[in-house]
Length: 247
Figure 1 (cartoon, rainbow, N blue to C red):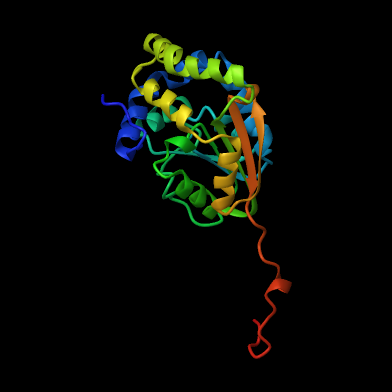
Figure 2 (cartoon, rainbow, N blue to C red):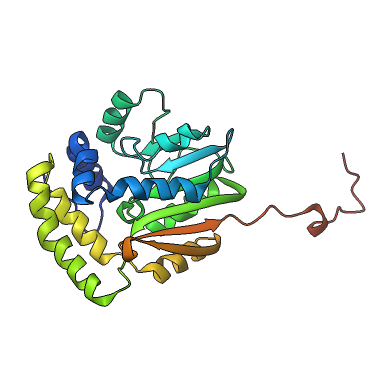
């Protein structure tokens, strides 16, 4: 398989994730030294799903990140454009409503979801800004966004060691555990090229989200970005036309 490049051609990225799907969750657990479980819990806590709410999990892969929302009583929709990931996920979690969809053209009506989340997937969308706008479109007024993504460690010596791990150790470990180790060379490069915490917050705001902020996790290896949709306009903000009777 030809691995994806940083231009993130959608067909290449989808094929790459198809190839790693079978051992994806195991590989992530090994490469993160088990930290991915803590990160998933923090995402769910940040979204704070309530029973009866509907949550969209974009780039959900096999649904590992989606199941905790269902456990909290929310209706969760795992969405991904890798059919290989969806097949593995559906086999393991047949009770979840897996949906195929491109992050830049989500197959949902406007204002459908109470909350939208994406974990370690925004940087793999060919146009992340378009993806952020699409997530805004499908979220209800006053709804919530949580983006969990690799970021920039805040302590300079640790940042240097982390980049060295990404570019040297991560691909080597992936060769031992992944079903498609070359994919992890792309993943390491995409992490290194991703904007820092403030840079991503700026892009979230530019996409139309309100009050973006972030929480550094694991020394800044990961950052959780939170934002909300603008509230719906009040009736007072749009007074009725006195010449037109109201129904």
